[in-house]
Structures are given as C-alpha cells and as structure tokens.
Image 1 (cartoon, rainbow, N blue to C red):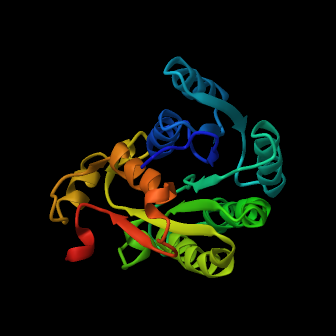
Image 2 (cartoon, rainbow, N blue to C red):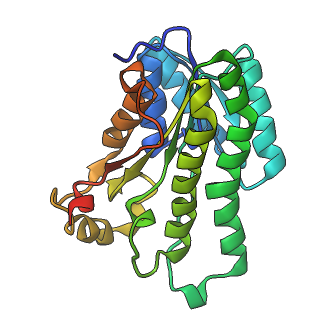
Length: 248
C-alpha cells in the first residue's frame, strides 16, 4: 500500500512532532523526503536519523512567516528532488491561544502568514508541476477546533478553518489533473509543541471518546495513508484523527 519508491515528498515542520513522524514514515516507505523547519540542528538530526535507517532525506531551512523564504523553500526542494515533488505535506503551524481582546495584531499577522499564506504559496509553486505530470498528493494538517468554537482558540481555529476550505478548493481545482488534496484534523496530540499545555492537554482529551491524547504517529499514519495509492479516490476529505471528538 505504502510504496513510495521513486517519489519525493516535502514535509514542512518536519523537525519535530507530527512532521518528523510523517517524514520518517514516508522515508521508510521509500520516498526521498525534503525535511523543512526553522532549526538547523533539529533538521540535521532528523535527516541523520532517516539516513541511518536506510532512507533518503535532505534538509532545507525555512521561515514560513516570510514569503520569500517560502518561495526559496519550494525552489530548493525542487532542486534537491530532481525537479519534481510528488507529495506535499503542509504540517507546519503556530497556535497561540488566548482571549480575543488580548490578541495582538502581530499575532494575527504571524498566524495568517504561517498557517494560511505559506501553504497557499507552496501549493501555488508545486501543485502545477504535479498536475502537468497527472499525479500528486497534498495533505494539509488542520485541527479539530477548525470545526467548532472553543474559547481562547478563535485565531488558531479560524486560520485552520481557512486551510480546510482551501483543501476543498484545491481538490476541485487540481483533482481533474490527477492531484489529490486532502486534510487531516488532529485532536489533542502529545508532541513537543503541545507539552507547554501541561494538564490542559489531558483535560481537552478527556472530552473525547478515547479519553486520552493521541500520539504524533497516529496523525502521521493518517497522512501517509492519504498520500498513498490506497487513497487514490479520496479528494477534498478532512480526516479526523481526534480520538472521536467529532462524534460528540
């Protein structure tokens, strides 16, 4: 099912958490993975781990809050991948929480840049090449709070709601050319990034039927499935990986 031999994948936010798990799994399945992130040391560590396991990977540093850096990432990824990216995983995101009245304008701009603009620019740069070859897969990582309101998460949730709409719009735009665009919607997931939530993560997870936080590998498995040939007739879907929160 997950044979990625000869394929290349770009994964943003791939130096930790869900992104690192996804990059590792795609490489284990045979893909040449372009690992992207802001931290050079973590990027090199991720690439080294993949190579030590027999996979192929390269690191490209990128600041997704800067449009020129995003464009450079796309160009450099294409260069390292021999001119073609077959899989794009828009995983990187920032998630400041807090009351609306205390949200700074700079926070709004940063979240919009990383969570919406960067995926938009990457799809604009890479999806046409996939379409010209008649094959490709894109997965956007959203969140369960893109689908319902939660106090303190207006900015984060709305940015990911926009990404869910973009997922469907891009599926309609690029699907006829053989490019599948889907999303995964994680619930409370234990990663380096959510460690700062402390007991709040467990309390949020307690609202789900599973009753516990998920693991980064749970979400990565869903991403690998959606980019695989086993999902070849799935377009514009938002797959919940949220411990069943969608059911309540």
